[in-house]
Image (cartoon, rainbow, N blue to C red; front, side, top):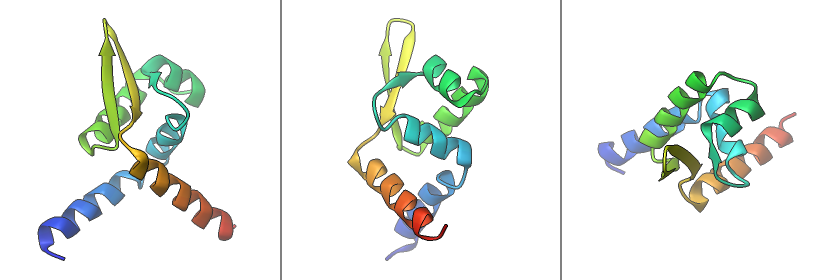
Length: 95
């Protein structure tokens, strides 16, 4: 594996290294949501959620769909769901 690919993988895993971002990703597994919905679900300020969503979007883990003045977020693809599922299984085995 070359340096460019290994760096890309390392960068992706860094994004998974934050519990708020993990909670957001799990929140988006069921359906797309707007910032307000995620904020209410996680009990956090919308500005904090927006900041984390920007990081997740830049890492191509989520996608953005605009409808008028509203922004809706969803997981980028099935790979993200698989990584979350595997992480949950691994964590459950070690508890």
